Length: 336
Image 1 (spheres, rainbow, N blue to C red):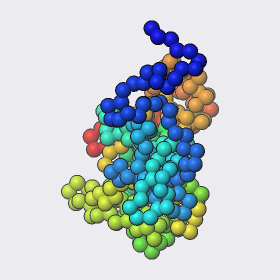
Image 2: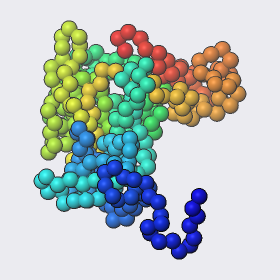
Image 3: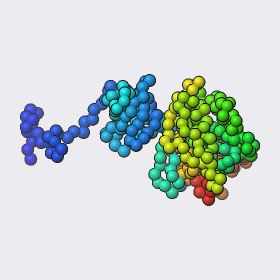
Image 4: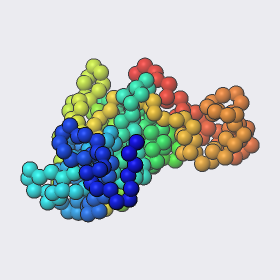
């Protein structure tokens, strides 16, 4: 075997052959120290629309990022043409660490999770009180995803002129979730947007909801200069609305410092990616009571220490019921 000294000539160094050219391969990647920071506003077929300072820039993901994908809400670093002019293209070279992640799967048997939005502070769960009928289990699933991903939930109940909110709100009173109740008239005249806006200032809020509940109508009222196509009719047979939002989009909030993220209407919210042991973190009054739980306790079994914790007066029994109801949402039922 040939050994090289300290002062070898370039011709003495063996390089791996490169079928595509004569340039030797290297594992050294550029540092891109001049990269600019941006916010991903939307993603469409491999093209990402980003806000860089006050410019909207179209970009694509750099090859060195591999399978790592950027999603709406991601803070990224870009190089290339950042002018934002027509037919220019920048390159995303880094995706910064995320403070929160809202994820879902297509169903509870789907092993592939999908990141809906990154770095959101709040999840606004929009549901109609009628037409279509409310689906508490879908709300529960959204709550579990919010707690798991590090987002604070907000309930937005629409169409209160068709049905009273008391019964539905009673299911969530023990969770201390903030809520806003609106009617169809309030959605149209802007009063609903004003009351919802009080909960959005200084935050990035992702809006999710079943199709036909008025989610996009509400977003249109919150961001009138960026109106999206309004929700289609609700099918009288299935009780489902027509999808009119096909991609997530981050929009600057009018009259306040904050962002809203409009997401496509959902008909299911799979939780295959959720570790049930993390849901307890959303119940700080119950979490200390798990210290005496058996290993890998599901918190809904005879030996669970939370029963004794509640009986000792450390927490309200309704809170334990709420926790177990949320954990049970991972068990799909017909019509969920």
